[in-house]
Amino acid sequence: MKRATLDETTSNSPLEAAIEAIWFRNFITGLIIINAAILGILTYSDSLSPGTVSALEMMDRGITFAFAFEIGLKLIVYRQQFFKQGWNWFDFIVVGISLVPGGESFSVLRAMRVLRVLRLLHVVPMMRRITEALFKALPGMGAIVAVLALLTYVYAVMATNMYGDTDNPEVAQLFGDLPSSAFALFQVMTMDGWRFEVVQKVIDDGHPYSPFFFLTFIFIASFAVLNLFIALIVEALAAEQKAATEELIDEIEEDVQQAEEERDEMMELLKSLREEIAELKNAVAAGNKADP
Image (tube, rainbow, N blue to C red; front, side):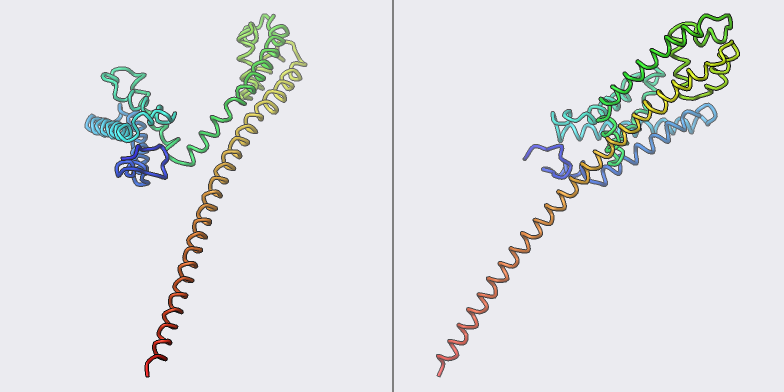
């Protein structure tokens, strides 16, 4: 028997074909969605009856064992090749955490069960495409984060020097030291209550021209640098969509080429049939002429 491959379009055994079938993936997707709903409902366990909580926890354990059974089937089929994909590692670790003995006694491990919901990111093709595009954009995001951190550091040093030496406890809490200034500028960058919670306090402390300082930071950090994240993600999604489109076009061209080859074979077959029919007609005509 041929060794199984991670290519979902081909299968070398009935078990591999079953695992890669659409109905199986849809079944797993349904279990993930149901499990997500159960974990959400269990957050209200204090207001639910003990019987309902027990039933939901039993369903959760049953779904966990179903996921473990799925991973076991894939390990049997793919063997070492299973670990060649990062998503398979993710599934293996997340399901493994859910099966840790005594995990229910630790709130962290119990809370991490919800990570199983993230399996939708690669089970659903569209989500997987978007997630892979985001991963491809991470190197560029790192450069943007570095620029943003440098910009925040420069402005934080300036803000500490300009506004940190004050008797106002509220302003001192915002800009009394470098970490506090960086955190306050981060709040300004997100524009979450920046007008009254940060800038107005600085103005009231005797700095009437401070809005110009904060506005330049907002224009540079929020409107310029942060928008680079959006541009980078859009570019990554466009590249991923282009790659998917090109792959689809290649598949269509292969199908068209195969259809043309089959058509040519049919034409050759029809031609040979016509020749044989013509020969038969000639033979019959010659036989009729030979008869007295």
